[in-house]
Length: 430
Image (cartoon, rainbow, N blue to C red; front, top):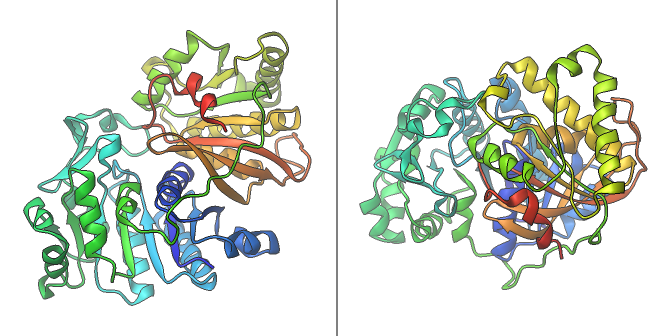
C-alpha cells in the first residue's frame, strides 16, 4: 500500500517525478486522473506501489477547475492509504498571475489542516536553481530565458516570491541559502519558527545536496511543494528500484509526436529533421478539413514504417518561431490533431510513442484511454520510458484501437532533453 501521494499539474511532470521516486527506491505508479485508481485495475496497481503520482491537466486550467481537480486527487490518494503528499509543478514555475500554483497549494493546505509548506522549484540536474528567491534557468534569470516567451505561461519575473504572492492568500516568505547550508536541523528550526506559520516558504537551493537538506528538514511536513528535484532527498522503502521492462521490441513501429513550442524542443526538432522522416502539422489544413489532414499525417507515418525502416517518423507543430501561433485555439487544435494521430497509429500497430509537450502529452494519454503508467528506463533527467495500456476503443476522432493494447511511451516536457533525444531515446528501451 502506498504511503506517499503526489499531485502533478501536467503529465510530463508526473512521469518526471515518478522517475526520481523510482530511482530513490519507491515502486511508483502514475495514475491518469483521480478516477483511474477507483476501479479494480487501478486499485490493484496502487496496492503494489509505494508511491502514487496522479497526473492532472491543471497547469493552465481555470483556477477553480485546477483547485477542484487537485482536491479530488488528494481525496483519492488519501483513500488509497497515502499519508504524506507532494504537489509537483514545473521547475520553471509555469503559472499566470492568477495561478495555479498558489491557489492549489492553499487548497491542499486547508484540506489537510496544515499551516505552511515549502516552495522548491529548484532542479539543478536540469539547470533550474533558486538563489535569493530568484529562479535561474542555467545561467539566465527566468525572465531573461526563453520562458519569457512561453505561449501559455510567459514568465516575466524571476523572483519566485513576487510570482507567488498574487496567487495566494497566505504570506510568502524566503529562507536563504545560508540557512539551508547550515544543515537540516537548522533549516527545520527556521521552518518551524512561528514567524513562518501559515506561510508559503520559498527555499533557496542551487545544488542537489541542498535539496537533500530540504527533504531531511521537512520529513514532518504533511505537504511539500516543488519540482521533481525535491524528491532527490526522499528515502524509499527499497534499496534498489524496480523498473518496468519494455514491452516493445527493436524495430516495432514508432513515432515522435511534438506539440511543444519551447526553445529546447525546437532544437530537438531541428536535429531530428536532419535524421528522421518528418511532417509539420498544417494548421490551415486542419481547420479546413480536420479528418483529411489527420488522415494524411497518419498515412505518411505508416508509409515511413514500410519504406524507412529503423527511423521513426516525426510529426511536429513548431520547428521555428515563424511557425508559432500562440492562440489558445491553435494550441487546442494541435493537441487534438496529435491525439487523433496517436490513437490511429496505435490502432495501426505503433508500439513506441515519444510525445513532446505537457499539454500534448495529456491529450495523447487521455485519448488513448491510459489509466496508469508503470515507470521504466530513464532517457535523460526528467524524461523516462513508461509502460501504458490503452483502453479506449473509440478515441472520439474517428480512430479505434483494441482494448488492452500495451505500448511503451515517453512523455517529454517541452523544456527537457538533449538536442538528439528524438533520435537517441529508443536506445534506452530495455
